[in-house]
Length: 227
Image 1 (cartoon, one colour):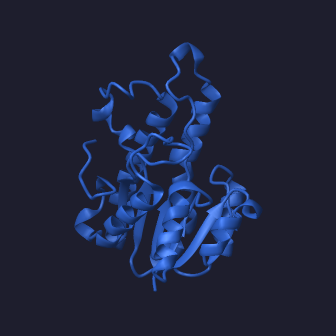
Image 2 (cartoon, one colour):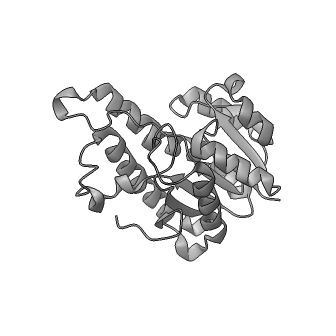
């Protein structure tokens, strides 16, 4: 069975992805910032590794512990601060952390695990992003602020697109996937989707990714999202 590596999997969408993949028999290597607190994740994942995507030393040490080929790398770890605050109330340090987690983190992890991804059979690189990172979505009346999250996800989309160009000659597919509005700490209780519904849709899209889909930006149902 293929081996999946999921970052930020101790809760929310990451945990739901781990559960869904493990239930069908796939090998799941999952990460959490605090391994000791990821008790639920430990019950479903093949193994749990400690990883802080913002810490180069943590990423380097983690990469040394991952020695097997990785078929699908899912960059899922995320951070959502400054939810709708006006400019004069925004914490700029939180903006920097959002970029570090959401945009730079996936680049760090991908670079560190590239040898393992090259050795895998499926060669799929998946970034859990958001429609909120689409420049076309800024006119949404409900989402006109959230500078830190939206700008960092837009940066992730650009990085992932550039990776799709660079890695295409090696047969690696880089895709950006929006999980939908999901009932998580980040999405809130009013969201229409459960984590299970989102994860099932995401896995279906991931399973169907072909070389022609390299560089795509889609939602959990496979629908294209405008940049």
